[in-house]
Length: 263
Image 1: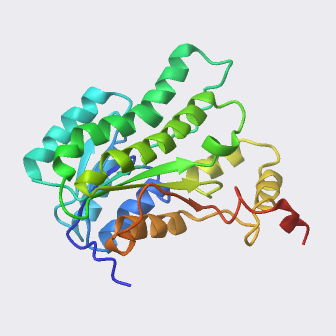
Image 2: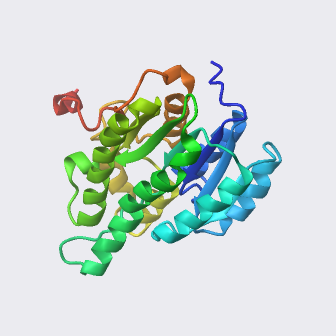
C-alpha cells in the first residue's frame, strides 16, 4: 500500500532514541517511505542519524533540543521555519516513564510534566503556523499508564492522561483548519530501554515472561516496528477521516477479557 508520504515533512520529537527505540524506528520508517523527518531531541546521537537519513532523504534534519524547556522548542522551530515553509505532520513522541511518584520531590514531578506533557503543547503551539496546510495532522504517542495506572509514576501517568485530553481538545480546536489529531497508545513494547530495565532485575527473564503471559494476542510484547507501521498509517491520507481517536497497538492488553489468558 502506497502511503503517499513521499516528500512529506514530518516533525518528530524524541526521534534520537537508542537504536531500536520507538522514536528511532519511526524516524527511519518515515525515511524509507520517502518522507522528510525533522528530529527534535536532546541526545547528540541525532547528528549521526541525520547523516544516515540524508543518504536517503537529503533534506532530513536534526535539531538538538531539550524538550523539557519550551524556550528551546520555540528556538528549534524557529530554525525549522528558516528552512521549511511548511510541515505536514507533527509526531509528539518524546516520553520517559521516569518514576516520579508520590515520594518524589515537587521538582521531579514538575520536570516529568514538562518533558512528557508540556513539550507536546509547546511543540504544537509553536509549530502550528507551519502546519496549516491540506492533509496536515498531529499524532500524539500515548501510554496505557494513562488509563490503567502503574504505581510509582505519578508524573508520567498525569502527563499521559493530559496527552489524551489534548488529543481530543486539538481534534476539536483544529477541525476548522481540517487538521486531524489522534493518539497512538502503547502498552508493553520491547524497546532497548525496556530491556535495560529488565537487565537491572535479578529475575529479569522471569519478569519478562510474566508480563508477556498477560498480553492476550500471542503472549508477546508489541514490537517498535508494529508501532511505527501504525503511526505511519495514521498520519497518511489512508487515514484521512480519522480524528480525535485513541488507537491501541497493544495485543489486546488494555481491553480484552483476561479470561482469554486461561486458554
